[in-house]
Amino acid sequence: MHQVNIHEAKTHLSRLIQEVQTGEEVIIARGNKPVAKLVPLDAGKPERRLGGLKGMVIEMAEDFDEPLPDFAPYMPDEGA
Image 1: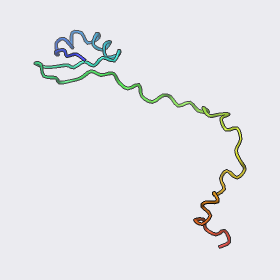
Image 2: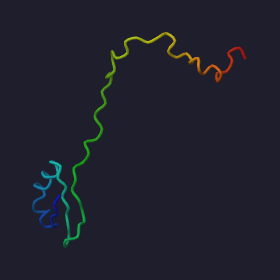
Image 3: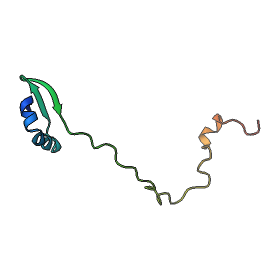
């Protein structure tokens, strides 16, 4: 990270942006007092890809959605 004054920032903006793209942070100062910071933007979220899990589920039990026996005391009676 290094500091430049406003005049230098205006004069060499392209060079400063190249530095920021490589991961460097640049402080812009007015009269030796920092007033702004140039930092790289986050790349953001990756693009969603539909069907990415296709073929991942190989076998599913017939009773996969049945309540577990441990929870029987908490389940309502089906005959009530």
